[in-house]
Length: 268
Image (tube, rainbow, N blue to C red; front, side, top):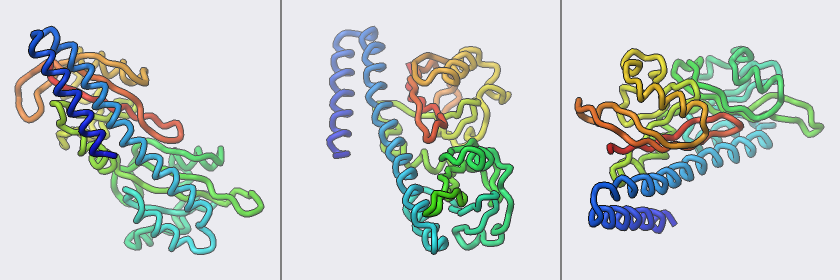
């Protein structure tokens, strides 16, 4: 199935750019957005497939966490791109954790973490924002509530994911195809993924290395409030210090109402 998708994408690149080259540079400007739409659509589908796996894995774990939480958490972590898995009781205390190297965290109160506070209040699945985990790394918590056989709320089971790890696995098959690269940001402008790893974790709307670029700032504001769209900005060419104009097309990915913006870019 994937081979046929890649073939279709490659075919569109060849068709678009061959026709564009024969028609001149104006046609190339028209062809690139068409190719960008295909690349972005595939990347979004790949990302949402991973989120669907996380959702399905958590649902299964929520059903099976009793009576053997240790086994359930081990199976959950081994099946997903997770940096850690845990079970939290109805008061927000960790009662089970995987991998074993973090067992010292059992008994820790995580009820004040934003995503956990929301789940404890609503008893609904949640995907939080980036935070510094008790394990010591920047992560996103994704949790589902657990209910007893009598439908009583009993806590939550969830995973910690490192956004850059999850996204690099998702985007590796699309990165660079047809000249397109990607970056991913949350709605605050924080970079969750970029081919230049030194930029991951920076906030596009406030970091000093970005704020002097007016077109980039205008685009970031637009991306933050619009679920999908397209635009242009100027920044360094990847891997060099040459300033170039870039075209951007974006869409939204995420789970349980959380929104990350997936942005496909190419130099003009």
